[in-house]
Image 1: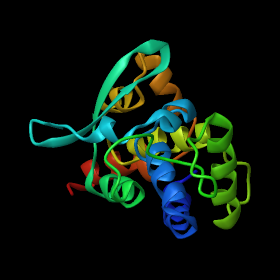
Image 2: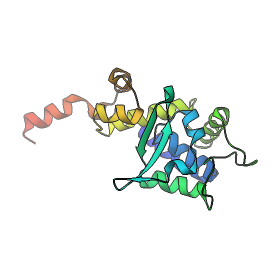
Image 3: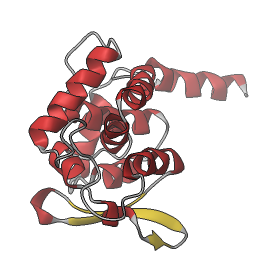
Image 4: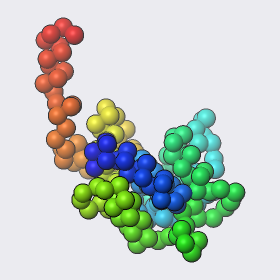
Length: 181
């Protein structure tokens, strides 16, 4: 997903339900895996660390992670939380029961269909979009690796090589340098 598709996905998700909106931000901005997003509890993002609201989670391989929560993400999470102070954050919109990985896939498919994104979008597509768009935004590879929680930077580099972003092509910097700009 490119930047504009990701923006549309996030906007449309919020119009479906607050459940969909929170899930979209967890996947598309926080780059969480489907199982990680399904497991987020309200208590997991209640702490503040060095002036930042943070999300604590257990990632792949039972590795703990702490990630800052940006204001737009916090707004989506708080909209979903409502008056609750504990429990699983994203619930099934109709039954109110906790979601699982399959629910995450179904919710993502519904958002993508409503957003009229013309290809198959999965939770991993959103993780990929978050990492790729971070690199496109100029985030250094090491910081993108931390966002993705990849142990090996070569895994994160794959996201950089997998895109053909002409906006960041080296010819632009070379032209500006030679032109004295």
